[in-house]
Length: 458
Image (cartoon, rainbow, N blue to C red; front, side, top):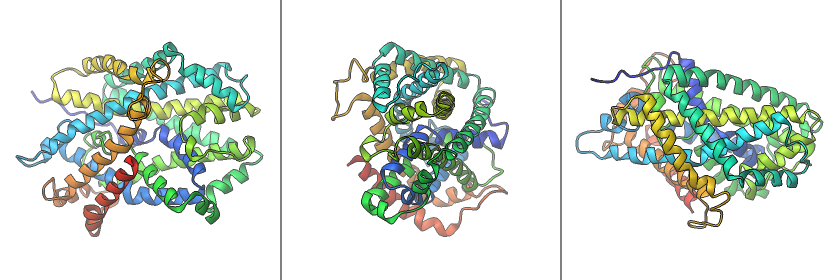
């Protein structure tokens, strides 16, 4: 007997959950840090340009495959490909990307939970400098039991939400969580913009300076913006396509992609409104350099800044609650994709699939957790487990998967342009995908993705 396909109760649920998948820690910490490292406002402009040129069409292609097949990546290509084709092998790359992403992402999400608790209880306020906060952070990540417990907490909570179902669990929890995330973000941005030296931070962030652009190196800035625009949306491994599979045919898909990318970009831009005024007020304008673009910035430099603020405990608590929501939105979305994968390939119930994957995910997260302490000296290709997992997902699987989605949707050896074009323009509302973009999407976009892949690997 065919299983009944779940669906969202509202378009708002689809938009917020899909945006939640794209909105993650990369938006909130990596975007403002890399903006500070590569010259400020000019980087932002180039980043937005590449979101339009690269992110939106790839996301539209992934949504089209999901909605056209009404399946997850487990069987979406099986449904749409012609007999004898091998596009269905893409499912192995996609599900590998989802598991690899969660093998380290759940651990970092656990850090956010721990720091939220530290600020809520005030236990971290005694550390006043970045060096002192570095010692606090180092002590935390070297505590295997503590990090393991936080990671297990994230895994159990997020799979538990998914076990309740798409509408009763994922949508019911994620929708208010995303709304609260936006409220927290706006409140923190307003507070930061009222700080004494906020104007200097905003000028660096929002007013383009050719001198800063040239000093950072024009090719360095362009390549960094291209990479950030590509990786921020989590496209290429089916984590967006699954939500396309749950929606109806009422609206055209380009409009949905524009909405999701706009919300994703809004969070990235708003995080800069929080961080840059704070850095220019309490850190002498120092943000980050190209060698320090990592999550550690949040737990050292930025946390030390919070501790200097008059209302530092409140700001730190709200900021890390914001980070918890941002990370959990991605974890829940990817876990939903993993569960859908299992549901389509097995006869197991959703709750049992969630339970199996809780155990599996805990085991798979161990190399990352242990790489912070016990296995810190173990290197593969010069990288620890966390860095290696991140590199494989971000620099290899995401661009390769995106390239395959685009080729599948545009070539006659795949689904084909006509089928793709018909699917994305089905519906009565939303922006129509123009036919004159066919040469760009079919020939130019794949070249750009290959360039991103080569740059990322090299």
